Length: 136
Image (cartoon, rainbow, N blue to C red):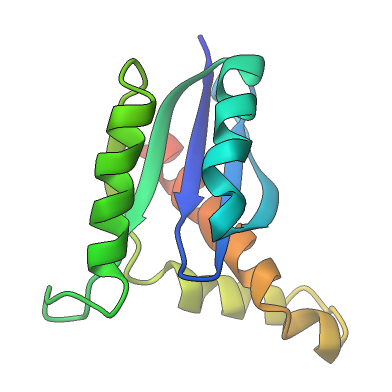
């Protein structure tokens, strides 16, 4: 078995989470500037044995596109060309950022830490990945 990597793609920052090699535990990996995402993935995917990638597909409550949906679709196409052997699967991320914010506020962190957008991105990716693991 290999790792599963979850991507919470954003215009400026992208949150990443990953499983252990046995695909049991989802762990927040990092938040990275989106402009640096592809070079990071080119190094990380082969080194860590990533066998599948999940990407959060942002939609509104009524299933219409958000301001970032097309950028995510473009990234999926780019990813497929860059990593043709690694399957990428879209997952609904409609509620993850809100749930991540709620979870962070319940952790007892100081207000300044709770407001870090990068923390929300990595927690959202982790929640998305954990939900996926619960389904498979």
